[in-house]
Structure formats: structure tokens, C-alpha cells
Image (cartoon, rainbow over all chains, first blue to last red; front, top):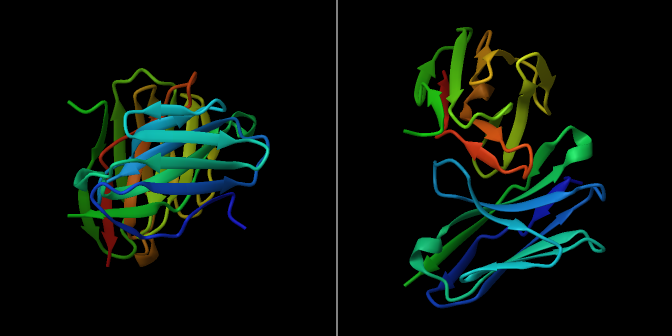
Length: 111
Length: 112
């Protein structure tokens, strides 16, 4: 089993749709959680950090459930520009601070 | 200018050749990383360094070596390239406090 697993996707949605991605992690000692966005052939860039209390940034909401060891990302009112691959990243400071990446979920938003 | 700069951005080489990918950063971060990404997959950690005197193997270090020449510079070498090392390589730094990673634009390597 992979340490970080994401919905396999791909997700194909119309503009304006709401879409949710889930990610599970196996290491209960994990301490920091992130969603990164990666456009085709480009470098990943931080979309949001994920906190236990949940956090929202405009149309994006991220939540963490430590008891069930999963992280979610909700995108409301999808835009064409949201089309990308979304990477779930888990960091365990106890593991020398290394970050572990999920394989990513690809989202395509269509007109 | 980018905070994390990788060179070369694209390289085609032949099996058995020695290749060096270079990375420099202006973020002032102590922690630097080299990742590899294959199509449809996430990033796999090759090597990481938490300061100039600290070098650690990641998940897939076989066939690779690194050098941390200074806080700002971290290079990755393939001593004898093979075709299955064809991939997109990313250098990154991280903020010690938040864990956020900052990536270079990537180096696309093709080994024929």
C-alpha cells in the first residue's frame, strides 16, 4: 500500500461544477499536509496548506481528518483554469522532514 | 528571476554518459531536494540535504549521486545514464518552519 493515496481520476466536469478530491495517508505520525497544483509539464506549486480546523481560500476548501487519516479538497464553481493535476502531500517531521507525494488527481473542466 | 533555478532545462543523452543537473536557489533555505517524476506518477525523492554537510538518500537513490557545494547549490549526477532514468527531474527547497516546498521549473532528461 502506498503511503499517500489519492482518488485515481481523471475528473471531467463542466464549468461551474463542484468537485471534491480525497487523499488518505498511512503514517499516523504525519504532521503537515498540503495540496499542490501541477500544470502539464510544469513544476508543482502550493495551492493550500491543510489544517485540522479546515481552511478556505476563495472557491477552495481543504479539510483534514486525523482520526480517519484523510485530507480533502473541495473546488466550487469550477473554472476552465482549474484544469490541472492536484497533488496531495504529507510531511512527517519525525521522518527527517521528508514529504511524500500522492500520484495526483487530474481535473479537466470543460465549457 | 526564479527563486529556484535548474540547468539544463532539457537534455538528450546516450546510454553510459555522465550527466549533471544543477540547481541554485535564492530562497536562503537550508533544505534542498531532488525529485524525479515519471508520467502519471507523483514525485519520488532521490536525495535530500538539510545543510551543506548533510546528504541523505531518498527512496530511489540508486544510480544517482549529489553534491551540496554551498547553501544555495545542490547538483544531481547520473554517473552512467540508462534509458529508465528518462524522466522529469525537479529540484526543491523547503521552508523549515512550514514544510512548504518550492520547486524549480524542472529538467527534462531523455536517455537514448
